[in-house]
Image (cartoon, rainbow, N blue to C red; front, top):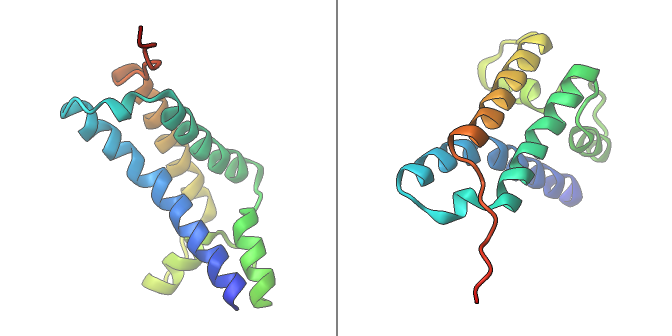
Length: 125
């Protein structure tokens, strides 16, 4: 169970990174914080949400969810988010709804590249 808990924690931080980075970028741009324009951070964030979108469009369950479920000896075809929403709200949301949300969120992340473009680190003389 310890390894399954570790996978769950990693998964939580992945989701937190994907979701929290966008408002952090917007707020950081408004406050003129340089790190929000860091290309490594920005492209990693974009890649993270595009991975989620690809999984969802292809109908693939997240590898972290599968790994955790295997370690806990649980069989399910539902996604990480759907499992937790069901546990929290006792209501099952159609998986297609999450695909739409993921695609729209990825669109916002991509549009943010136009609104708050990443800037390469300038070489110091």
